[in-house]
Length: 309
Ligand SMILES: [Fe+2]
Image 1: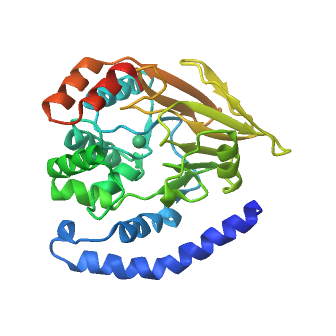
Image 2: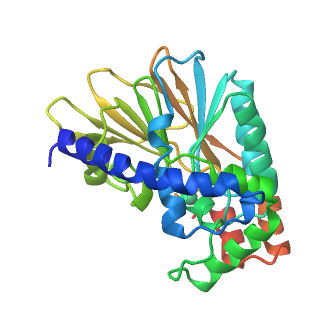
Image 3: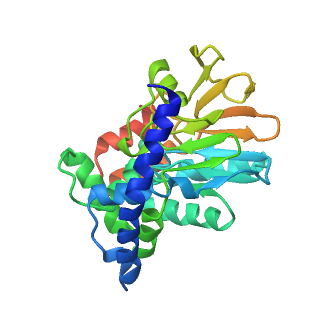
């Protein structure tokens, strides 16, 4: 299938779902207690999916964008990355979803992201964010369900409303931002190799795609002949993103890295020079792990933070 066919197919599906979402939106907004409205997983997914076309910005008014994804309720890691980015004069922020899940500070992380959004930051919905809004998933293992239920209890109705309204993707100039992939953001399939990276890049016209979900930093590029290769990111080393290629950037996870290195991950993108810099930011993993244990969450989640995988 060609990229054009896929794009047309996406547009058709988006239009078909649009009227359905309007019914759901009117149902939600007509309720005095919006956060208590119970929508199924499929309905919530459709709502988020239909935010896609409304978040397009053709000209950005900032230079240095900090891209953070998969924060996973890890306050210590988020604080460390935000401080690191602020020190380097990041003048705008993008959070690519999975704000919560796994970690012990979901309310703090959601409040912090909400504060950044009030200053113009961009934020997406991830599968874990969607997961706390509903309770009809039958496919979760007991540990995952325990985390979801615990997390749900930590959030206020206002925080849940904020999460429910998050979009699944947005575009800034030549860049697309999405949590999982560009070919079907709502299915949460992973881009974990060159083949999937090619599939994602072919599903969008964007020159640069930023996504999360895999929890490991990666950089893929496609030449004009359609050949895809992977570039191994090195912390603190800036990479010029040539306009002659298309790019797929995975900054790695802030709150739960899985590549054997426990240091938090994020990236800075210079929107003028088209230069990208990956960073690894050490933080107090022991404090974050202790909080996971103190909250009664699975010990394996604490261990993961200590070992980075
Ligand atoms: Fe994640």
